[in-house]
Image (tube, rainbow, N blue to C red; front, side, top):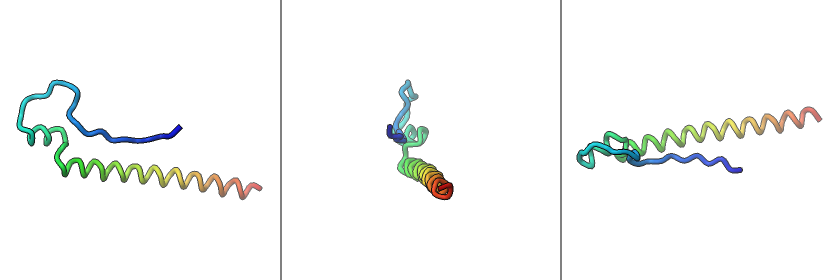
Amino acid sequence: MIDIKIKLFGLPDKFIEHGSRNELFNKYGLLPEDIYEEIDSFNLELSKESSKIISDKMSSIITDKIEI
């Protein structure tokens, strides 16, 4: 089984009030700078998770070798 994390961007699946495209994008975090920040934060989170997984795996390998 592969654990894949994704980040979705878009308007909510419900009735939304009327407004200009820019107003709605601003409200729902869909302006380019908002999307950039979300992607940057998401990548940082994934990087931390990956580092922990690798560190845990390496610790396990080292511990297994020491016990031999």
